[in-house]
Amino acid sequence: MLNVGTALTLESLEDDGEKYKCKIADIDEDKIYIDYPISLTTNRTAFLLNSFQLNAVFITENNVAYQFRTQVIGKIKKNIPLIILQLPPKETFKKIQRRQFVRVNAAIDISINCKESNCHFTTITEDVSAGGCAVLLPNNIKLVQNEIGNMILVLPMHSGEYHYIQTNFKIIRINEGEKNIASIEFIDIQEKDKQLLFRFCFEKQLELRKKGLLKN
Image (cartoon, rainbow, N blue to C red; front, side):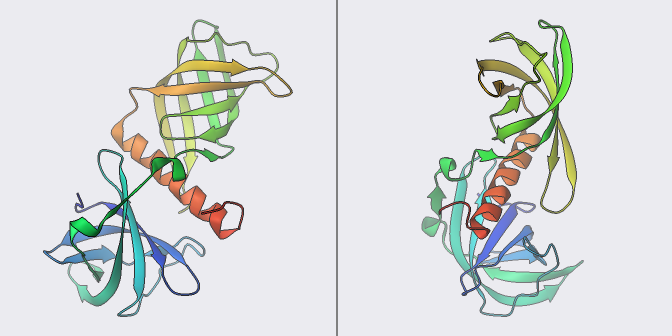
């Protein structure tokens, strides 16, 4: 379930509720070795003290999210300095419902190409998930429901990195009104890109909760 390279989101169980991101560098029977975590608030390296209590969240290769309680039990230097976390029994892992973080409101740059409608345009998303997104349609653009197209999504991660996700899509529905919005479903999206989208959505919801704009 947990593997070397798995991304973890850590949440302090102390009063500040600070959140961090890191990756698993190694796993023993009852220990997890992680690289030094980065604060999602400051984007700086965090130095966690021994006995520091944390809640850890990760997403499996099958896109299922789990959380578990852990604590810092030491530090070690292998190829790089690492922090050692306690690994509890798998039976204590709790599954998180995807609806808690799958879809988020976010204005992300996107390039759309539809052959049937003979149009190629750039716009922004209204919301995004690992399975699809809603895009704002310019007034001069008319799309056809159920048509297939391809797109490039510029995904800005909390770390400051940008990832370019290219995939095919299908137009699910078009809502016309004060704003014309097309709901699209990703088709044959690569697994690594789906993981990036899950990560983006999860980090975005953590950010919104931190600002008090989203309830737990």
